[in-house]
Image (cartoon, rainbow, N blue to C red):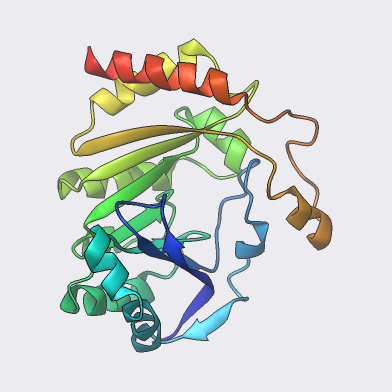
Length: 238
């Protein structure tokens, strides 16, 4: 059983509670217009590792996890594209008492309920709430993401929901109100974050000689994003 790992960040502070080891797995079927990690798209690249080898790396930082209430977060790319590797790695993590977070857009290859048995928290990335908008933004249908969400709801998993806010696409109150209605219908949501669109990954497109889909779109104003965050919070409370 081998998986493909893009990179490992030893001291992550924003990808779940506490200090976390963040494992970025290789491969993603989405082509999000605002993606800042196009180097994770190809499923044929990355470093091959076994679940045992990966968990050995994670255990190096277990003392930091324990002291801060942290653990390990699996991100990508899209980690759900390596379901069998994920299941075996998660099992080993739980045997070691490691808190497991899954950062995902929900677009994998199935086996969701089996995977989620070993997950303590989901960071669920909403790309767009409407099928047409989702397709335009990601070049992928929304169906698989909703299938994953259904599995997470069935198992009553805890979730943090995250939404990137892009000027001219979803930075309006109408979208935020519709997003709030969806979130209010979900169980287990502990936190909702609106993330301002940025261009920090643009240099990767230049190096890879890839066309950048949002060329000419300005970065999201952080103050406006905070205002929309407050609106969303108040709408959810109602």
